[in-house]
Length: 141
Image (cartoon, rainbow, N blue to C red; front, top):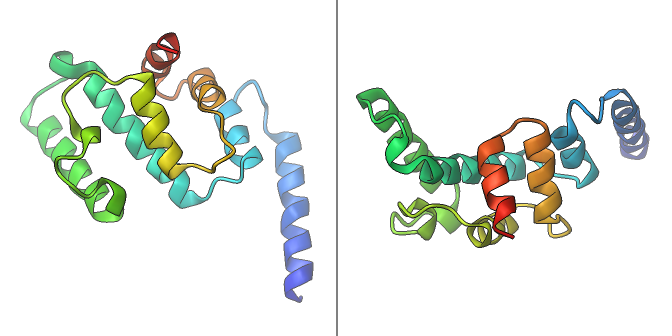
């Protein structure tokens, strides 16, 4: 099979996947497909959401030794993988509560350019991915 045939086969398989994925159950996954997210972009978005969610929880977050160790390892991993977020003083790691403006700035650095942050947050919330964070950010628009 040549490259052109392989590409056409993959396009057809994507079309089939879109028809079988329930939009009501998986709006975020369909959003990823519709906007041609790469695996790296999706992972970066999840990392940004994790850190913003941690900031949202603030003092109410569980602060046991395991949680602190996990958070520190996650931050170290993010700093290593993304030069954009490599500085330990990057505002993404601040203790301040997250804002809609923060989300737009960080997300726009890691997702495809045609992504509307409002629709992204709604898709995430509708699929129960960080729903409290998404609702907080959408309320700040």
